[in-house]
Amino acid sequence: MGHDLTSISRFNVQEGQKMLGVHPLRNQEAAEIDANQDQVLQDGEIRDYLIQRGDIPDLDKADVDIDQVVSDFKVHLRKEQPIQQSAYHSYEQVAEELESLATRFPEVAERVSLGQTTEGREIWALHLSTGVRDGETLSKPGVVITGAHHAREWASMEAPLYLAGQMAEGSISDPEMRRRLEQGDIWIVPCANPDGYEHSRQEDNWWRKNRRPLPETGSSAVGVDLNRNYDDGKPEHATLYRPAGDLPGRTDDDFGRATSDNPWDDTYRGPSGASESEVQALLKLELGRGNIKGVLDHHGYGQMVLYPWGVSNKPVENLAEYRRVGEKMNKALNNSFRVIQSSSLYPTSGGSHDIHHANGIFSMTLEIGRSFQPDRTRLEDICKSVAAANLVFIDEILARHDSPPPTASGPADEYLLA
Image (cartoon, rainbow, N blue to C red):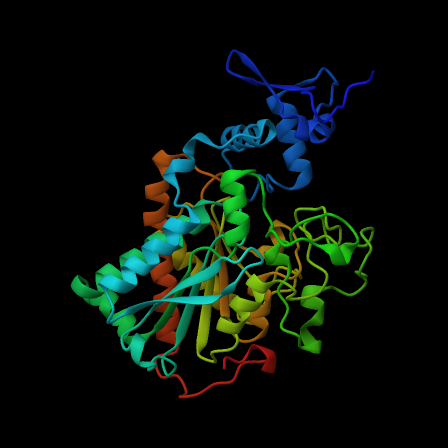
């Protein structure tokens, strides 16, 4: 009688002097990695596989701890939970922390649900501003700070959460922080992808997408890459989601290696633009309020400050301003990051900052840390330095819009807030 190859381990990875078995559910993936077919996945084979997949970015442009990335991927292959998991907040702990801040600092903070996920989790934001509970913030320039679009990028959630605490607590004792909340309308969304994040924590530390089943694809695939799903519904911006010549339902013409029409791929863009509830919720905030002037998104990893476009190598019309702000943020990061156009790392479509930029919102991305799940010993330093760069970004937006118009309109009716 033959063996069910999904129920037995066929491959091993080496950890120090030990050989540890790959989980049977990862056998097919392990077979792709095992270049010399000896059933032992060498670190070099894993590294080459991750580079080929795009999970390790261009090493000439990104700062990568390859040993840590390979080690984290071995956890995925063994289907275990990372040893550093306890250093990171769970979704429930994030929700509790935001509620605690809103309770302790009611004059300047409120916890707001932007919407719900497929699995029924709230997409929580901390809304920070003086007069926040009186509905008197729309006349101020708004800034949105987001994290954890991609589930496995755990530090990208911790950094905005740290900033939320710093800003709320600083409203009492720090005149500069108080000034920001008097002048601005700040929204911090630490976890844009709650379902995916919890799945990454509990089931598969390499999971990237959200967790919506995809019956419309005729498959049992699950999940959409939220940062390939952005679309504002405006015909003149349609190619930001699906570039010309990239046809639905085909993969041979997909735009670059980092955006896919294959529902099984990590970078699946979804069946249509803004199809996902998480993206809809964020667009309603960012495009619907009318006063949002800046969005800063956090991803992990590579130590980069990215600016639009992601879909084109063409320079944005205000390139000098993006470069100036990016370099100023990098100074706050001890000049340890690289300031580059997003497409020069790799071209993507359906990215958030392209849609924001096309709608007149100054939008940048921070790729923080040197691996998806940095070691606990590095996490606090990452959060502190990234928070300093966040404050630079906020200050720049507030300085550019110190006298905003009393009302402004979003670009598409479907995103207007009720």
